[in-house]
Image 1: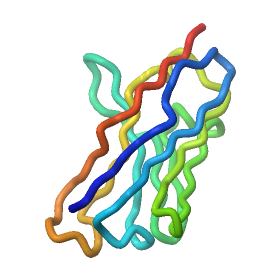
Image 2: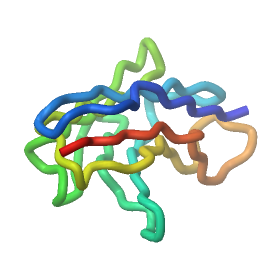
Image 3: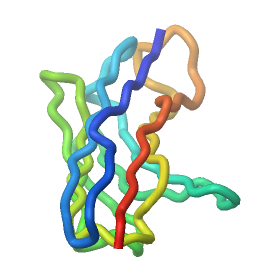
Image 4: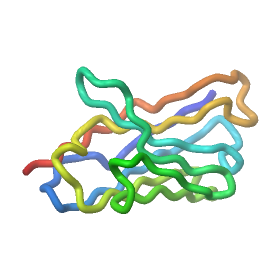
Length: 120
């Protein structure tokens, strides 16, 4: 079955950096677009970054120029490098993919989330 497992969250001071990882399994990772979202209490989940199978990337306006999404197909892992972090980046960050190629059950899949806290 499809599984997405995030890691790398934590507490960091404003201006610092973190790198999140999402290990994927249960589908043909290399051809699927992978997404990072984030959510804070009381707000809708916000799209942070997208990387397609051909490594085309897109970013939410709030993180452009500070965050970088990348993927290692051999390790079936997608990364989110977060630099120049701000307190408003504090959120739970989720890995996501939709209708993964090769999965037994199509649909939208989410990881369990990893908490990022940026102190001022």
